[in-house]
Every structure is written in C-alpha cells, then in structure tokens.
Image 1 (cartoon, rainbow, N blue to C red):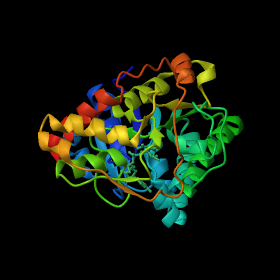
Image 2: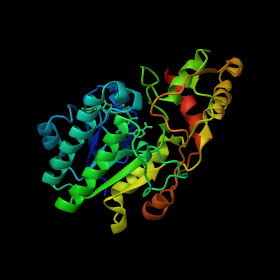
Image 3: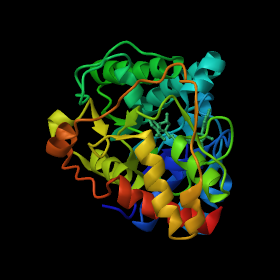
Image 4: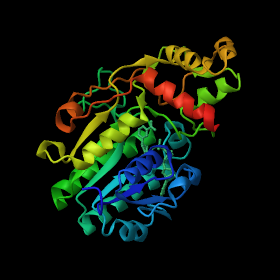
Length: 324
Ligand code: NAD
C-alpha cells in the first residue's frame, strides 16, 4: 500500500505535521507537505528535503488554488494546518477564523473535487467547551468557550455536511493536549509542556495559571501518529464521517505535571529539582478538567496508545535536552 500512495500533509512544518511527515516518509509513502511557515519551522522537516518521496511546498490554505493544485492526485489528506491556541484566537479571532474555517473549507472543496479517498483532520478537545462531564465522550459536547473552539467545531460540522452532500469521506481526530519532540517552546502561545521544559532547563520558575489543580489528558505525539495512520487506513463504515477522541485516557494536574517534568529533567541536571513553581491568575477560556474516553477509537480504529505521560515525558525531555 505504501509505495505510490500519495499523502498530502498540511501544517507540515508544525509540531504534529512534521512528525507525521517523518513517519510517513520513513514508511515510504509519497508525501507532499504544505505549510505557510506562520507558526511552523522549516528546520522540523529540513532533514527530509533530500528524500525522493518528500516534497515541501510553501503555501497557504486560504488560497483555494494552492489547495486544489496540491490535493489533485493525492490518495489521502492529513489536514493539520490551523492557527492553534485559545489565547491567540481571543486576541485575533478574525485571523483564526480565516485560517481554521476558511482554509478548512478550501481543503474540503479541493478534496471533494479531486475525489480523495479520505481526509483525516485535526479536530480538538476544545469542542467539549463548557461541558463538565468526565470522561469526555464524543457525542456529548458543551458550548464553545473560545473563538478557537468555535473554529474547530465548525470544522466538524462542515466535514459532516460534505459527507452527506458530496460523499466525501472524512474522519476528525479530537486531539487532547499533544506533546513531544519538535513542539515549539517559544513565543507567546507556547504550550505548557515545551514552555515549562525550556524554563526548567534554564532553572527559571515555571508559572502555573491558577492553583495547579486544573488537569489535562496529556497525549504523546507517537499516540497521535498511530491514530492518524489508523484513521487514514480505516475501512469500517462506522469509522467514516465521524470524530474520535485521541488521548491517552488519563488526567494529570499541573502540579503533578511539573513534578514529573522535574524528575525527568533531573537525570540531566539534578539541580532542576530545586526550581520553585510560581502561580498566576487563571486564563480566560480554560476548562478546569479534561479527560477523554478513548473507547470509540479503540473499538472502531483499533487505537491502542503506547505512551503514557511519564514515558512520553522521558522521550520528549531527551529530545529537548539534545536539541534546545
Ligand atoms: P503548529 O502550530 O505547530 O502547526 C500548525 C502548522 O500549520 C504550522 O506549521 C503553521 O505554519 C501551519 N499553518 C498555519 N496557518 C496556515 C495556513 N494558512 N496555510 C498553511 N499552513 C498554515 O500546531 P500543532 O500543535 O502541530 O497543531 C496541528 C493541528 O492540531 C492544528 O490543527 C491544531 O489546531 C490541532 N490541535 C493541536 C493540539 C495540540 O495539543 N498540539 C490539540 C488539539 C488540536
């Protein structure tokens, strides 16, 4: 299946997209990679540039002709390009909407016109919004708490309509707090694990928003890669035109997260254990707790996440220590 099977990966220079590129190039798929380099970095994929089965195109999903020309002739699309971050979307909802909704719609149109076999797209746990039910089960969502969450929910609505009206096969993967190698620790919108890792490495105090009791279902990148591959290859009719939680299925509060990170980093520098944590105000749009039920992905995709938080942190920390 792999040789001569063409995959378009959008958001390819970003954290998740670049890891997907690496994995599928290694598996000898023909990979076309699209990114406008707005939040992603070429260095994440530069080592792939000399491979025969990899081609990078700098371009923007807000341009329908770019989408059309790259989707044409591909078998599968793994759509990751978007502007992430709840705070970014609160500061600039228009650009988040243009990219995450307008760009997504362009990709759907291009996939429909080209007759791709399936478009697997990055959905988000933010779609659970203000629902306090735990664990999160795919069918029970609340009201969105941020512009970003709206964009990701609209993606699901559009994907559903494109299946019903045009027969386009899609699968949405609702990622829960993904972390791992290549995740950007820099900038105002850095995610908590790379940010805290970088701060701890330089013996700066990490700042927790709130009292540290908020919890998340932190998900290691290799679990996410597995989910994408299984979704891409899924043929069970109940697995098409639906969404799946992609998580480990366990939650950890931020106080424990910092302790685990310190333990992991202390293998490289034991003084990191002495760095104190600072506490700041809660952030708008943050939900108190997040925990996924992964039963649906287990039963319909045969998803079986191999990395729990501790194992994932050890791998991520090893990468950051060697690369930052
Ligand atoms: P990232 O910012 O590292 O990657 C996104 C990539 O998309 C970047 O390389 C960026 O340059 C590119 N991009 C942005 N706008 C573009 C445009 N207009 N045209 C072309 N490329 C564009 O973020 P990530 O963490 O890798 O996230 C990937 C996807 O997963 C996103 O859709 C995000 O919303 C979703 N997601 C991520 C998480 C997480 O925990 N990381 C959680 C839920 C959902």
